[in-house]
Length: 416
Image (cartoon, rainbow, N blue to C red; front, top):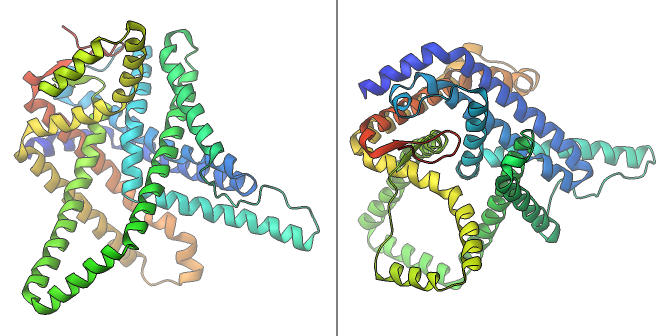
């Protein structure tokens, strides 16, 4: 824990102006993206859906840039994977980190409610513009512009076609990357975040539909009645059961959030460090491999391409989790404790800001100035959070130096 705090303090002292600037840039980019997406979404739901992922991408770009800014001060990581000296190599490393971080970041973004916040801001802007269009139609006699969907994009053939086109474009860029102009890397990043965002949203909607269907089944009603009867007959058991449910919920939130942040950092930094991968074995795996080897060579090549493209998105996540597993519970537990302290500081600063400002009118002050007033809290917390995550990852790498190998920054192949 002392080593993590020492490295975090050094990183914060050296890089906090850059961290603040990057965080503000990401926040401003998110705001502009949501405003633009909401305006366009009032006229075209498809257009709004195409612009909405830029808000997510703004935050991801800022996070990746913040983590990579700290890379030069991370001693353990610097020994294994020094910062690339050439500008082209650094640019390629930045693009690779962005592409690798999209999947875990979007999943994290949705799971912790950030995507819901962005959606609320998006639809608020859509409603504002749509109200003006309706007023013009009623009062001015103008013909209603737009598709009338009010920004709501229903999943259908058009949405699936967008997902397929985005995935295909991203795959083609990866396959012919060396032959294409460097500027198309930005397009590839956008296509990646677009299809991942639509996929995550579709999966979340499907899971919600399944959960709603399950809750409406008679078996669930019967189980609820059984639980109420047991609670009435055995009150101590009900109290213990409720306490266990509450404890699991609280502990899950406290543990999973810092682990998610460390996993994202591991994915971003993991483009330079590759731990020894776990290998599957057993009779079933051997039989499957033998049957696979009997297929025609061309079919095996195509299947290998599809499989490698799919697995490549999940391998960095698995590697990051594997690093944490090998680092041991003491180091990871110390990091979780420090992360919880930062969370407590976050809540304390929010309360402190309201005490400093004092009692003010809700309509004339807080509804106008609240975003600007409370911006002071993340300006303090986000640099602390990022340097803590980076220093914890550096400590993990320090524990596992014999188990990792340097990776070439351009080819991605472990160096000999």
